[in-house]
Length: 165
Image (cartoon, rainbow, N blue to C red):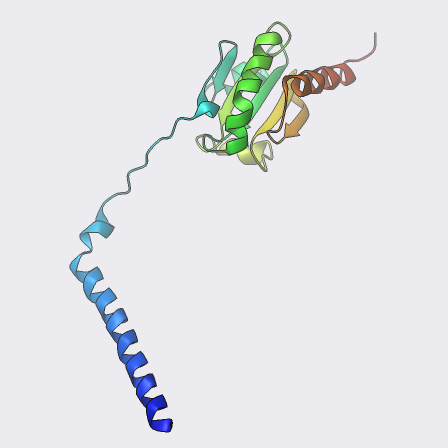
């Protein structure tokens, strides 16, 4: 029994050595694959699509289009590959078509504009932030929304932040 156990250990040891040795041999012979730059492929999804009443925000236009806007602005902080972002995109567009006279709508892709993640404490996507007079007045996280949800969110948020006359 002891002899067969030792033989088993010896065979296992040889197999491991062959595997490790083969790995090192292969990696030193074929390291050209490791030196090639990684090609980044930009993926466009439904979340990236803009409706006729939506603006694409980025570092170049965010302050002017959002913080200096004379209308309230609903910003969709999203990522292209987020399932909930893709799902909520057509609903966001439909809402923008219904409320275009009252609110400006736009999207900001946070992977391309990472500075906004910390600045606006974006913890997940999609995050919808409503701005009025350059300040955040409300936010909603998650993509399971309907047009009515958006309308209620916007109207409730704007009405509670409007001073009584």
